[in-house]
Image (cartoon, rainbow, N blue to C red; front, side, top):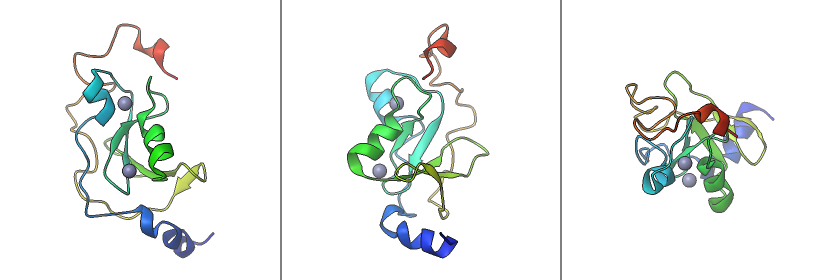
Length: 122
Ligand SMILES: [Zn+2]
Ligand SMILES: [Zn+2]
């Protein structure tokens, strides 16, 4: 698939005007959970935790909403992932910020990551 075709496929999957929902995973923040890495939904701005995190809220969001495209929400990472095709996707520049605050620890959030968290990764 060419880059142009990819962009056509994603036309209804990217809204570059929507800011991210917050600095951390939306569901983990609401449920006092913790995450490893963060992903941002390209369609609605939902910030969710990655598939290595205990709760995998980003892929759950993709499955329940059919929003297939996420961008990494980690500092220094710009790649997109297409959950439907299970491969890296083509994206465009989304509304800032493009990553969680740099002083936010990984895993996060501060004070809520348990001892031995490495053993709880998926
Ligand atoms: Zn989460
Ligand atoms: Zn979404």
